[in-house]
Image (cartoon, rainbow, N blue to C red; front, side, top):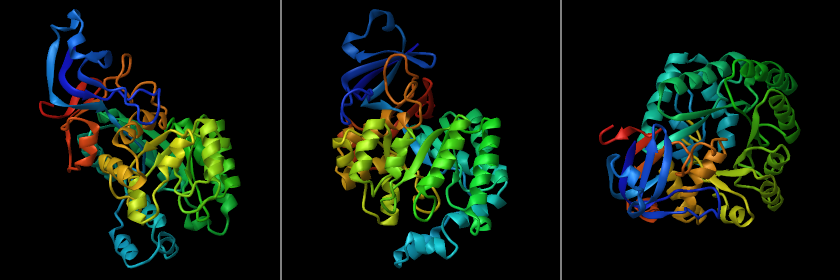
Length: 408
């Protein structure tokens, strides 16, 4: 039964309250038994029964819930650095895609990759994410766009769950774009997604969520409704790539289908904000993607003022967001979207956990939750996110066990 003492600032990040309410405790202590938190409070108030527990010293540092990256495209083959150069020379994301690059290039390479190659790639990335204080990650498919490769990607995620100390949630994203072989017959591809791949993914129990990229260059609102209806029939909760490149009603659709989250949202309408707030759908900001694509950032303040919970994630992928550095995304959110560090921290913890359906077990530091937390080498969240460093994480804990850092 360990007790962590000498915590200068403990951000509990409970769900209640406003976006910036961290429910912080200064000069705090934290006690857990096996994997579960059993006491949180001021060190001066530590009950007598815990005073003989094994002591760990936070060194006067900040302690936060384990960070949650609730939107990644983790498994893929190949990188697309040449597109980074093309965009620097003025080509748009859509122009690159129309010339054979973009998502379809990654699809070709991922179809050719074997499971072991994908597994090695994912393990290397997840190990580095854990070093940043990340303890939970949502992993999408969508770089297969056929039955065999989609199952291959999702099977890699299942194997990762059994061998790495990080919580994973898998999402089927077959409706990412229409693959080349179906360009002249979209309806046949939708039939494949709805009537072959979704049932196969469900039968193998490979995913919890079903996602659709709703955009002029991807899928229409009505096509997305077909996919979500099939997914719901097989027990998948909806997620939506919404309003990233244009205002196409994706946020409104997310509310309509009671999606757990709507992600991107750079072009969200006022009506979309209102409907998401009423539905309780979490908005997921992806500032690294906005940065790489040189797009206007999400208007976070409008969402918060409209009553929408805002999470933050990396959108890690080889094209539009080739970075898995969630703390950098948090700092960018403060700079580009006028979020406070406290609001960004809550976005990367309890609200991100809610966007993964894991808020009942992780995302905050409170009694009864799992002991997932990170020790950050800063006195408080303001200093941490203001003074950006390659890595300020001093130690990462999952289920009460130190999985990275000194003494791990």
